[in-house]
Length: 285
Ligand SMILES: CC(C)(COP(=O)(O)OP(=O)(O)OC[C@H]1O[C@@H](n2cnc3c(N)ncnc32)[C@H](O)[C@@H]1OP(=O)(O)O)[C@@H](O)C(=O)NCCC(=O)NCCS
Image (cartoon, rainbow, N blue to C red):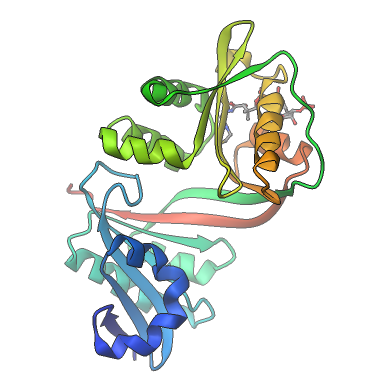
C-alpha cells in the first residue's frame, strides 16, 4: 500500500535520510515535497515549485519534479506510482510535471507514458577523464561574454545550436531570453559563456561549468560547420575545465545528434547512460 507523506509530517522524519539525494534542491530552495513510501521503503519523491525551477516554461508557471527511487518494482506498482505522483502534481496545480529515467527502466517509462507523459528528450550522458593536456586551438579566438552581452550570447546560441535535436535546450534558451536581470545575474555567475571568432567573424558559442566539470553547450554557425571549428571550441573548453582542476568532463547529447556524438567520441568521450526526460503538460494552459 503506497502512502504519501508531506515533508512536514512527523511520520516522514525516518524516511528523510533515505531520500536526501533527491530532496537536496527542495531543501535548499525551501520547496515543499512529498515522499511516496511502502512501509519504511521510499518509492519516489514529488517536489513542487515554480519556474525557473526547470526552465521549460515561462517564469512563475507551477511545475512538479518527480523522482523515482525504487526502480525495481512490478510494472503495476510503477504504473501506480506514475498515476499517483501525477495526481499529486495536479492537486498542486502543476502545469508541467517531469520525470527523468534511464532508458533501460522500460517499465517505469511505460508507466508514465500510460498516464499521458511523453518523451521530451532522449540523451546519452558522456564523460571524459581529464588526464591529459589539450592542445591550444589555433586560428580561433575565444572571448568571454561580458554580463551585458548575455542577450546577444543567447541570440547567437539559439542560431548556432540549431539542428541539435535537443528540445529541452531549445526551450531553456527560449526561457532564458525572458529572464529578469537578477536571475540572469545568477545564471551568469554559475557558468562561463564564450563567443568563438574566426577571421574576426563570430562562428560559434560555448558555455561550461568549471564547478561541475560540465560542457553545457557547444554550437557552430550552420554555414561554418564541418571545418574543424567545433573540435577547436571543445578543446578550448576541455583545457579550461582541466585548468579548473576538474578530474573529468561530462556532457549530454541527444541520441540522434550524429555530428556532436561523433565529435565527442573522437575526443575520447564515452557513453555512460541513456536517459529520457518525460514530461506531462497541461494541454489547456
Ligand atoms: C556538433 C557541432 C558543434 C560540430 O561542429 P563542427 O565545426 O561542424 O565540427 P568539426 O568540423 O570540428 O568536426 C569535428 C568532428 O565532428 C564530427 N562531425 C562533424 N560534422 C559531422 C557530420 N555532419 N556528420 C557526422 N560527424 C560529424 C566528426 O567526427 C568530425 O571529425 P572529422 O572531421 O575528423 O570527421 C556542430 O555540428 C553544431 O553546431 N551542431 C548544432 C549544435 C549542436 O548539436 N551542439 C552540440 C549539442 S550541445
